[in-house]
Amino acid sequence: MSDLPATVIIQEEGPREGFQIEGPIPTARKVELIDRLSDTGLKHIQVTSFVSPTRVPGTADAEQVVAGITRRPGVSYTGLWLNDKGLRRAIATERLDVRGGINLCASPTFLARNQNRTMQENLEAQRHMLQVYSQLGVEVNMGAVMAAFGCNFEGEISPATVVLLVGQLLDLASEAEVKLEYVAICDTMAWATPPSIERVIGAVREKWPELELSLHLHDTRGMAIADAWTGLQMGVRRFDAAVAGLGGCPFAAHKGAAGNICTEDLVLLCEEAGIRTGIDLENLLEVAHLAEDIVGHPLPGAVKTGGPLRKRSV
Amino acid sequence: MSDLPATVIIQEEGPREGFQIEGPIPTARKVELIDRLSDTGLKHIQVTSFVSPTRVPGTADAEQVVAGITRRPGVSYTGLWLNDKGLRRAIATERLDVRGGINLCASPTFLARNQNRTMQENLEAQRHMLQVYSQLGVEVNMGAVMAAFGCNFEGEISPATVVLLVGQLLDLASEAEVKLEYVAICDTMAWATPPSIERVIGAVREKWPELELSLHLHDTRGMAIADAWTGLQMGVRRFDAAVAGLGGCPFAAHKGAAGNICTEDLVLLCEEAGIRTGIDLENLLEVAHLAEDIVGHPLPGAVKTGGPLRKRSV
Image 1 (cartoon, rainbow over the protein chains, first blue to last red):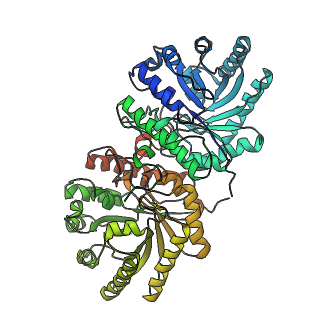
Image 2: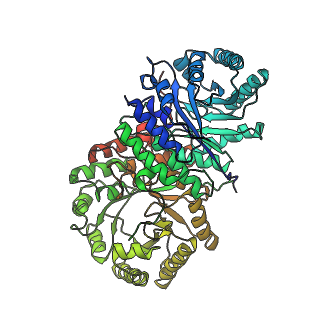
């Protein structure tokens, strides 16, 4: 009936996704959250982004955050960058697992608005980044397709477009003689639903049955857990997620509206399905409450409020 | 791959679920919400409950609400009751679609705490209600299993227990010479996850392949839409839901925490899957905003905040 994986890899992006829109938050509290996340069993934590402090004041302290965390052996700490300058800042910290990625976007309008590039210019920009990675000796491990399910400006994105872009990512990698460990299919604007997950993942799978895929999901329209379940049933075993649902949503009318898929809700789903996450849910729920304390308002994750599936004493 | 239905029946329970825990809310505003719901294409609306005004002050104005609504032809307006007295109050309004149901509970502890009955006493109470329905000439159309997936006091409920209780409901109906149109499988304490939906619905289906089932889901642990999708894939075509996610959650630390599955989020899911709901989503989203205005705080539904899947003007 389904192709559920035995284990999943959850890449925690709460600190990066959250701190870039919340705040201001003292650096020490960001470090506290990351250190607590390190103790939950999570093996991948994206801690900050190295982008313009003018455009994203919330991550202006990226270097201080990285300098402050206690690195736990076996946990990979990563950062995000959008260009050479950010990459060099990440490398300069000497405390991150710096591996490169290339990103294409399925919506020309979103790309133009967000990065002021055409599709062709973006392809060239990725080719340039591959050269930079090579020059700096940075291993390239992933590709990503942004806006893979739909776009608030263009509507639904066809699976054929996603297949085209995955092909371009693989061609770029091949040209640069690097191998992508996985390709992230990103629901940047929360258009995915279980049927569109089936269509898009299905189309990519049909063309590249052996290619490992990951899903980056947003819960803006309440579909993220159902989307993840659909992905799991199709054998997807790598997900980005954010503790407590950190990340917010730029369209939200009130703070606490859904942003990224919530890590602890995803962990509960996986564990109930017999899929090992390696994460201690009870511990993670405490960190989710800490995240709410740090941002100072309720966050959207459900299990931290509803409680895990355990008996209460009568 | 799946057994998706062509259409679904969504039974709106927002007014009843919401008003029993929110408030106080002026009767006129309850009537306003129900009248607006009547214009969305919903065909079943549960408008109030006829229970003790001491225990549930929020529905003390049940008769006034029913007297105030404008009944739209083709829409079935229902109420909830727990005993003969409530049933007689519902009948006396002469404005409701009064049809009877029988309910068993899969958790003895929950039953004892909530209704102060043993499993055997509850079975007798249902037998008594069937006699009352017969005496009052009320058609019986449904049975329900409460706490069908798990209980905060007993933990997970086995599918075999649910099968046993569905069998008891069918036996009771048969004894009373009535036919149940459907049996509601109710996740009273939000323990369901997609795998347990598969197990429980699967077990009942295996024994009674032709029996129509409905799902009553709570989103307290963020699983409701994924649960509904799993049910839809198994051919379930009847769901209870609450506009904007009205209903709240007794375990919630803050208002706005998830209660019932949200009607408009479920409608979006169905429509995206090509399943007809007969409901105008844009209209329903306006009613969801009205519901928030009436209760005076944010409600958990996601699509009312994130927006439907439509292009925005650039």
